Length: 146
Ligand SMILES: [Cu+2]
Image (cartoon, rainbow, N blue to C red; front, side, top):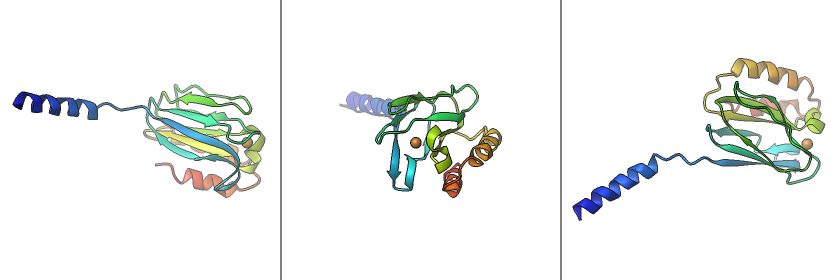
């Protein structure tokens, strides 16, 4: 019985130390909780090894990265298609929906520490210049970075 208890404890410790990679689902929407033309959620805090899957919940959207951390491949998905990004490196990614950038259809993925904050700030300023409707939405997204 004692042997069994020790064994069970050992297995429990082993299981709790295994980190399970998560798949984050981001809906691409023409109308969401925060108004027209949104990624939902528009900010994700993830870990290396997680994936983000962009889901064409409503038609007319796709996703393109503006900035990724060093080592993380950029992406451009096709219209109306599910697209999965594997998060391979720590840092911030900034992405948008090309036809709706001017309406503030932008999102951020944070993986671990925001080590590339300076590059992010530059990319953010450049992209915010192109947003005509709801530019304050970008500030709300940015304010979530930790
Ligand atoms: Cu869009």
